[in-house]
Structures are given as C-alpha cells and as structure tokens.
Image (cartoon, rainbow, N blue to C red; front, side, top):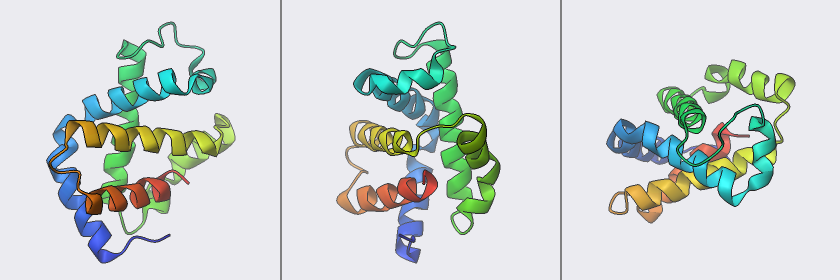
Length: 136
C-alpha cells in the first residue's frame, strides 16, 4: 500500500503539530504495548524496570519516535532511510513483525488521545498507512 501525495501532505502536516510531543507519544505508546500485550516484554527482558513511563521504556519510546521522525523526513524513500534499523530488528534482534503492528496501533491510540482535535479520520487513515509502511 503506497502513500499518495495527499497522504504524504497529511502526514507532514500532522507530524508538524505533534512532533514536539514525540517523547511523550513514544513513552506512552510503548508503555501501553507492554501492558496490553505482555508477550512483547520478551524483547525487553534485559531491562530491570518495564513499568509504564520507566526510564528504559521512556528511552526506547524516544528511539521509536526518532525512527518515525526519520521516516517522515524521507517519505519518498522510507525503505532506504530505515534500512539499517530494519536489518537490526530483523537479523540481530529477531523481532516478530506482528509486534510492529501492535506498536503502530498503540501509537495511533496515543495520537487519538493526545490530539483529539487534530486526529481526524483523514489523518488516522494516512498515519495508519504510513506506520504500516514504516513497520513492515
């Protein structure tokens, strides 16, 4: 599923509104994922504290949203821009791709909660397509 010009414009406009809160978005989304989908904790078993908002969860949430920011900057070549990250997850960390869908769903939930006036159905569709593309 490729992004249309309209999707890309929608994503860029929405991201410009929410990017200042990226750290909070990432921390909340990852916290939600770990609580609602406890099977995802296996990838973070080396952390001492997996509780919502803990330092390692917050740090990883920032890392996740940095990847989202990079993808937004490179909407025309997300695959190339995120190749190193993709290879790390696939070959080194061996993350099940289903977990990326879970994480992207949680990011969408946090967008809807934190930005209810900006997260229109059009934005929801564009961001869902974008995150599906980014995390495939």
